[in-house]
Amino acid sequence: MNKLITIIVFSLILPVTNTYARDNGHDYIKPHVESIKSGHDDHDEDKEGGVKLDATQMKTAGIKVVRLQPRVVAASISAPSEVKLNAYRTISVTPRIASQIIKRHARLGDIVKPGQALITLSSVEMASAQSELLVADREWQRVKKLGKKVVSGRRYSEANIAYSQAVSKVKAYGMSKVSINKLLQNRSAYADGTFQLFSTIYGRVLHDNFIVGERVDAGKKLMVVSDESIMWVEARITPMQAGLINIGNSVQIKINKITLPAKVSQIHHALDETTRTLSVRIEVSNPDDTLHPGMFVNAEILTSNNTRALYLPEAAVLRSPDGDWQIFVELDEPGKFKAVEVKLIRINKGQAIIEGIKAGTRVVTHGAFFLQSELAKGGFDIHNH
Image (cartoon, rainbow, N blue to C red; front, side, top):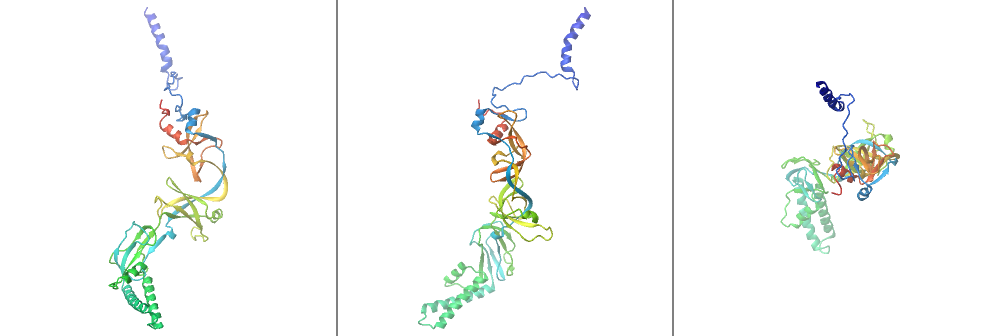
C-alpha cells in the first residue's frame, strides 16, 4: 500500500519538474503566455520601439513614405574656422589731438546708436581753435551784414576765408558739426576746449580702455563699437580647395548643436607663410548673438562640384531623446515605423543630407514629428478611445 502511494505522488510531481526545474542551459521549457491586448489594435508599439498605424491614421497624419535614393547635390569642404568682427561694421573711437577725458557716456557692453555721445574730452589745442572760430565768426557776421557795397572786396573775402578755415580746424580736431553750430549760436559762448566723440553706427561697445581724468595722446583707441548682427568667419583651406569655391557659395556654420546659414564673401589671394593655406571670409547673420569674436567653429562650404548623396526634407530629420539625429523608416509591413539614428552632414536649402542608412530604404518624408510624438507617448491611442 505504501509503495502504491509513493508511485502516485512521484507521477504527479514529475510533469512539473520536467517543465520548470531544468534551467541553466538544460533544455529549459518556457511557459506559453498569451499576449494581452489593450483593445486598441490600431497602433500598438512594437517590440523594437516602433509605431504602427493603419491607412486611415496615416492619411489623417499626412504621413508620406518614399524609397530613399541618392541624388545629385553640391559637394562640400569642411574647414575649422574662427569668428571675427566684421571690420566693415566696426569703428574705433579715438581722439585726433592730445586730450584729457572729462566724462564717460557709454560703458562696455552698452548698445549705442548713430550720433550718440560716447566720451567728453578737453584740450588746450581745441580751446585755441574754438577761440579762433568765435573771432572769425563774429567778423564774418559783421562783414556779411554790411555787404560788399560797404566793405571792400578784399576784406569780405578774407573774413569768409578765415571763418571757413576756423570751422575746418575745429572739425579736424574732432568737433562735430552739431557741436560747432551750438557753439556759434550761443552768443555768450566761450572756448572751454571741450568736445565729444560720437558713435557713427548702431552697435555694441566691445572695447573700453580708459578712466575719467586720464590724459590720452592722439590716436589712442578708447572704444571699439561693432555691429554684431553680421559677423565674419575666417576659414583656412588649401589652394587646391580654394579652386573649387566661388564667392557667393553657401556655407553652414556649425557650433555645438547649432547650424547657421552663411555665404562666402571673399577669398584671399595671399597664402599664410606659416600654414601655407588661404583664408576664406564668410559672412554669417548673428541675430541671436550666438557668435562672438574669437570663437572656434566649423564651416561646411559648398563647392561648385556636384556629388551623389542621400537627402530628405529638413523636417523629416529630428532630434532623438539622447540628442542624436534620427529619421523614421517603414519596417516589414505598411504602416509600421521605427526610429533610426543617422548622421546629419548638412542642411542645404531645406534639404537634410544624411549618412548611415542604406539606399532603397523606405523612409518617412512627411509626418515624422507626428510619429515621434506617438512614440514618446508609448503607444497612447491617438483617437482617445
